[in-house]
Structure formats: C-alpha cells, structure tokens
Image (cartoon, rainbow, N blue to C red; front, side):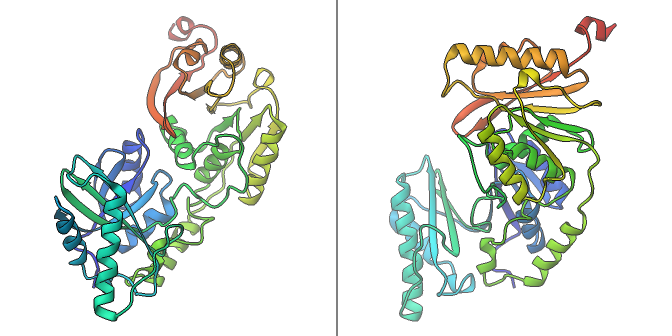
Length: 386
C-alpha cells in the first residue's frame, strides 16, 4: 500500500530549464508533465520516481507530496503536520530534517515554520512510542520539504537526499565551478545531437565535457552516486530499484565523435583530469592545455560551449580582450560548428561580434545569464544565404 495520497511528483530545476526538463521526464516515462516555475510536476508510480532520481540530468531534487492543507496560524500548521500518519512513512530510528519555504503567507519566517513542523512530527512519535526521532540538519535519513503559498501548505518528502547535481564524479573543483545540472541544461538547450563533436574551450574542472560524455553514452546521471533518501522510506522496494538500475545501465552505448576539453590554466587541466579519471572517461575525453586564441577545432562539425569569466573577478579591459579573442577564434577556426557562449556580462558578450540565432536566459548561481548560440559560416552570412 502506498504511503502517499496520489501519484504526483514534483521535480525542481534551475530557472530556464523547465521546458527541457518536461521533455526529459516524458522520455523517462512520466505522465501528465507540466512546467511550473523552477520546477515540473508530473505523475508516476514508484518505478518512475526511482527512474527520475537515477536518470534525470536536469532535475535538482525530486519531491513526493504527502499532504496539502490550509495553514494561516501556527496551530493550523502544527495540527496539519501532526495529522499525517508518520509511522507509516518512516521508522522512529531514522533521523529527520525539515526545509521550509514561504510565499505571500501569514507564516513568513522559514526557520519558525521548520521548527513548528519538527515539533509536530516529534510530538506525534513521542505520544505513540514514548520517544522521538533525532534531528540531523546535515545529512538526515528523512528530508521533509514544506512550502506555504498564500497560506496553502504542501508538505512532501525529498526522495533524492543530496541534490541531484551532486553526481559523485567531481573530486576537485576550481574557482566558481559550473553546476552539473546547469552544464547538462546548456547541452540540452544547445541541441547537440550526441553524435557529432563536442568542444569545451574553457573547461575549468571539466564538468561540461563530463556531462557531454555521459549523455553521449547514455551513462545515467546517478551512475556514480550510491545513496538516495528514498532508501529510508518504509515503502522502499529494493527489487524495483535494482530493476531501474540494471535497465538504465544496460542501455549504455559507445560514442564515435570527439569530445575535447581545453583550458589555458594548467591548474584547471589538472583538476579536470582528476575528475575525468575518477569518472573513468579518460579514453572518451581529450584534454589539452591551450589558449583559445590558438585552438583549432577537429574536422567535421558539432557543438562548442564556452563558459568564460563574467567580469566578476577580472578587469574590464581584460574581459573585453578575452571576448573579442573568443569571437576571432570562432570566426576564423570554427566553421561548420554551432557555438554557444554563456555569460552574465551582456556588454562583453556583444564583443564576440557574431549575431546569435538563439538566445536563452539561464541562471548560474544568483547571476542572470544569457546563453547565446551562433552558427559559424564560412565567409559572410550574405555568402551563406546566396
């Protein structure tokens, strides 16, 4: 018997990736998939929940709703939470944590909401058994999400535990590494066909190249992870989880194109090499220390994704020179490729000197960025049209 009222699933994501996540969840097998703000709602059984956790490249966390109720006062919140039959959901020996959010609600202090929710759950167990579950704010077995929207409260369980961007392959990082979900999202937005070449000329810790290699070979996003929070739920079915993993792992394929990751920094190359080696993708990703000014692209075509500095840490003149150099390199050496650049520096991105054929708004952390795509033609656009 299910511990949940219905088969709804909420998958949170980054702003700008909602539509791409809708498509991904449909491919995974979820039904009634609908884009929300920084999230997607869908429907699916236990197997679909496990599949989303193991296979979704664009999801941040997978929430399974438990109950919705009205809560304008602390007492209404407390009673609504306490009315849930928690002993059917998890054992008293499990540790718990609560993450709260609120929007246009009378209860507008997230720490207070979180504490009141914990009190209700702890009191439920204490009254039934005479003792209570422990709270672990760092790495709890049972992670509870509670969200109030105009006094309407929805409480659910975080089935993922650690966010899904924590793939498990990253052993080292440089300065401001790109989030793995954002990296996978940029690849999805670029429309890369998973067969042609993939180039990352400013690879940093190698995340874009690793995500591209995993995508091209159908390596599940959770392949390097060994834990999810739903393992601790009372309805966890080990044989379903085993089936989900075996089916996904058996669908892995070979990739015949070239994935090339380069960077001017020897430290970045060292970090990227550690991560690529740990992911066992060293035979699939070519790594090279080189200035983008001198970079030549492999024959054929494919996608180039560049994540340059945004001007947060280097001087304006240096940023201008860098973006102009990116544009010069693409125009001279990247004929036949689709080139994409992400940046929060809107002035600098114009210095590339190519007209974007596609534009997306995405967020890198708190920074609103443009992700612009350029088709690099031989000669002028006028020549190409003729």
